Length: 494
Image (cartoon, rainbow, N blue to C red; front, top):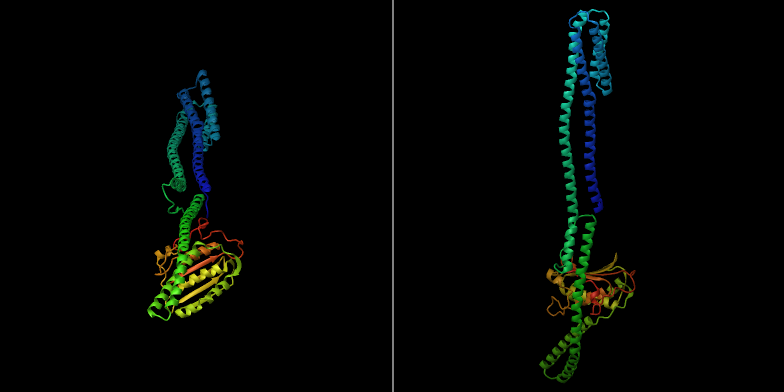
C-alpha cells in the first residue's frame, strides 16, 4: 500500500496530538475526581467534625449543669433548656449536612443520636433529675464522644487517602507526559528518517551540478512515497543523461570516423583503380608466358579487389543515405535475403532454421537486407561445421528479427565494444559491419542488441516499430549529420 509523505506527517502529528490530548483528558478527569474528594472533605467531613465537636462541647456543658442530680435553680433550668435546644439544633444540622454530602453512614449516626436527644426531652419533663444526670453523664456523654471521634477518624483517613492519591496521580501524570514526549520524539525521528533521503539527494544533486561528482550509481530509495518517486525519477533522468552523454561521445567519434573514412577512400580509390587497370593489362601481357608471373598478377588483382571492397565499405559507412521507408512484410524481406545465403550455409555444413511470421513494418528493403546479410555472415563464420543458425521473425509490441548461432559466443569484454567502429574479433575484418548495421537499424527507429543465445552462442536481435508508427522514423542518421540526436545502445547489450 502506497503511503504518501503528507499522510505520514499528518499521521505523526495526529499521534502526537492524540497522545497529549489523552494525557490532558486523563489529567482533567483525575483533577475532577480530586476536586470532588476535596469538596467532600471541606464541605462534608470538616463541617461535620466541627458540628460533632460542638455537640460534644454542649453535652459536656449540659453534664456539668445536671451532674449533681439536685433540682436546678431557675437560672440553671434556663441554661439547661438553652443547651438542650442548641444540642438538638446542631444534631439536626449535622443530619441534614450528612444527607447533602452523601455521607449516609455518618448521617445514620447523627440520626440515632438525635433520636436519643429527643427521648431525653421526654425524660426532662418527668423531673427525675437523678436519672437525667446518670443518662446525660454516662450514655449520652459516651455517644457524643464516640461520634466525634468517628467523624474525626473518617476525615483524617480521607485526607490521608487524598494525599496518597495525589502522589499517585502525580507519578501517573509524569509517566503519561513522559510517554507522550517519547511518542513525539519518535514521530520527529521518524519524520527525520523519512526526509533524510531528500537531504542526501539534494546534497548529491548540488555536487553533480557543481561538477564535484559525476553521474554515478542511482539512488537506492525503497520508500513508496513522494521521495521514492522523486528518487526513481532522478534515476531515470540520470540514466537518460548518461545515455545522451554516451550518444554525444559516440556521435562525435562517428563523425570523425566518417570524415576520415571519406577522405581516405577518396585518396585511395583513384590510385587503386589505376593499379587494378594496369594489373589487368599486365595480365594480358604475361598470358602464355611464365606461370609464376601469371600467378603473381592474379594475386595482385585479388588484393586490389579486396582493398576496393574495403574502401567501398568505408564509403557506405561514411555516406549512408537516409532510408526510403515503405510498407513491407518483414517476413518476406527476410525470406528474400535468406535465399541468397542458403548455398553458403550448405557449403559450410551449417543448418539454417527459419521461423517467419508476417509482420508489417516501414523500412528500406535494401538497407534491411544489408543488415540481415551482415548478421548471417557473422553467424556463419562463428558457427562450426554441424552447427545451427536460427532466424526468427515475430510480432508483438514491436517487430523482432532474431539471428542466433551455436558458436562459442562472445566474451563480455568484446560484447561491450561490439558496435564500435573498427572493433573486430576477426583477423581480416574491418570492424564496420555491425557498426553499419546498427546505423541502419537506428535510422529505422529501432534497436540492435546482442545477447547470449539459449544454445550457448550469440543472438542478435533487431527491433523495429510496427507499421502503425508515423511514416518517418525518428531522425537519427548514422553519419555525422545528426548522430548526437539518437540514444546510445546499452553497454554489453547492443
